[in-house]
Amino acid sequence: MQTKIRVNASYLEIYNENVNDLLDGSKRNLAIREDKAGEIVVDNLTILEIQNEEQLFQCLEQGALVRMTAATKMN
Image (tube, rainbow, N blue to C red; front, side, top):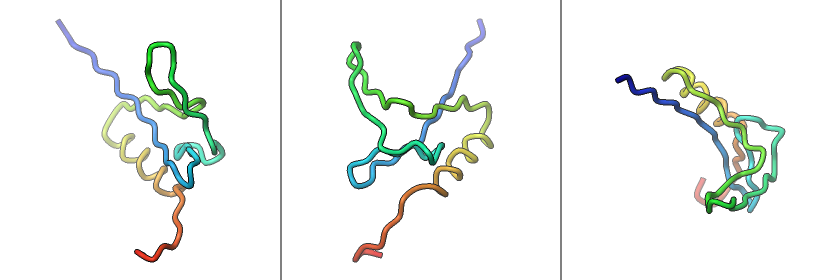
């Protein structure tokens, strides 16, 4: 018996009470809701199927480029 594993990835940030999709910079202020099964869902969030380690790292790099950063007293 062969086991198949599927890996999906999404990348979001919550910044100033807004939920932003870091894999698609045009998707801002997304809605969070609970579905009928009690699962938390972010509407319209990009989900990518990951085939290998390189794709996962590309996903993380892409998200890091579009995330919000702001100056704080800690920086």
